[in-house]
Image (cartoon, rainbow, N blue to C red; front, side):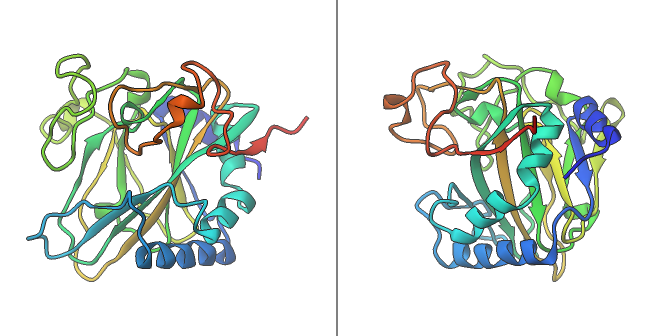
Length: 269
């Protein structure tokens, strides 16, 4: 899979890019079966991210590629990692983790504006996330990005339900800007998506999403990838997702050379 120079430039400049018709029906079928298995057998890391009064339902789950063979087959055989490597400009791509995000019809729960990397246990700039829906996603329900924010430093991670600073101490990082309140100050990127399309974005790119209106269902699996300069950064708190015991196996500042983070792609010689 070879990307155009324009796609790479767009990603590196704005921190997010859409790649159309990247995945085949067979590859999407793998993911659909994996999602069905994941929904029927959620892991201990699964969370309901919608409130009880929400007329819909929003569920998330993490780190299931080792127990769900369809996820593993997809990420090992699809062009996802090759695309990630070209966007990062790296020699090596590792899987960091998978993330299920399913919003059932009539879900009103929004995904607040946030960056991903401050929730994690990694340092470094070489990373990319892929957000892949298996359902058509209209622009009102898609993932939206604030262009260029991957180069504006780390922002305070907060819990989605209660807006608490559970990770870094309050005031230690700058707050997330009010994107909706000051639309003239931000360039927001948003793409309607069809099955086979995917968006790739940097883990520091500010992003969020709306609910799901009407009878639409939004089933998404996001795969996170790391590149050459990513290192392990143990935290004194529970990261999201957590990797319990990893600090006993890896030292701070070393590469993610561990079975949890397999190498999926290397740049051709």
